[in-house]
Amino acid sequence: MLCVPNHVALIMDGNGRWAANYGLPRYEGHRRGASVVRKILRIAEKIGVKYVTLYAFSSENFSRPMDEVNFLMKLFEKSLRKYGKKFVKNGVRFRVIGDMSKLPALLQTTICEFSNDTKNFSRFNVTIAINYGARDEIVQAVRNICRDKNIDPDEIDWGFLQKYLYTADLPDPDLIIRTSGELRLSNFLLLQGAYSELFFTKTLWPDFWEREFREAIENYQHRERRMGA
Ligand code: FPP
Image 1 (cartoon, rainbow, N blue to C red):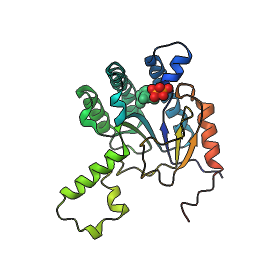
Image 2: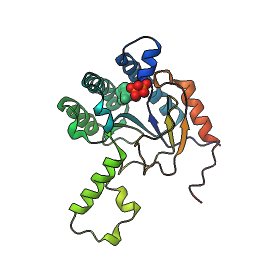
Image 3: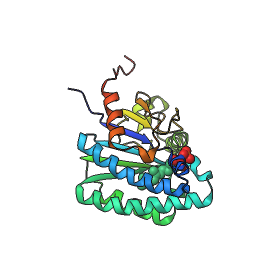
Image 4: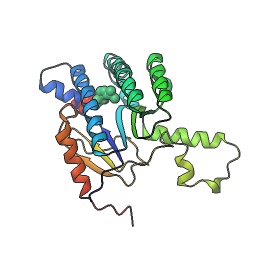
């Protein structure tokens, strides 16, 4: 039987171009992008994926115009409040990875509330990367290791380092999907994705629906994963 990836990570790209193609402002692309998130989570859960991680906002995205950043932060807050209630009701574990300290206070509160309310669930796991950057994650991990005075350097191996990453309690992604035709990882899960299968599609995120997601999964199912062996 062809196996379903346990953990799928998605780089949601192309909202701005989608909006421009329809002569709409960028925020309409983000709004439509948020509704696609809901569809993809539903289908992922249905086909048996256990972990979905979504790259919603990179650390670098803070350099976008203030209006766009503010719009996105409000959209995350509104969407999380809406999805969060469903997560609690349906037993879905919710997490955020990234540096939360720079996010608006209300968004931080919402994240904490739903992370806490769903912390005992494990059936289906949704993680949103907000203000996430893999290099920052590694820098933070090394700082925290150095702060821990009792560590013997010889103790440090990958298993040890892993516990200091934002993803400490998450499995590595089996499949990383990027939409919109860009062929790069853009500082997303660089260590965790060391052996992930990559799938790139020209489809813009707001058009990435069930058919496109299934196509990515089917493509993954025909890959031979040797994990370096
Ligand atoms: C990249 O497209 C997308 C983003 C920076 C934002 C992603 C946000 C969403 C999909 C909305 C909601 C998400 C959640 C988790 C509720 P872009 O703006 O870089 O597009 P472009 O490359 O075409 O300009």
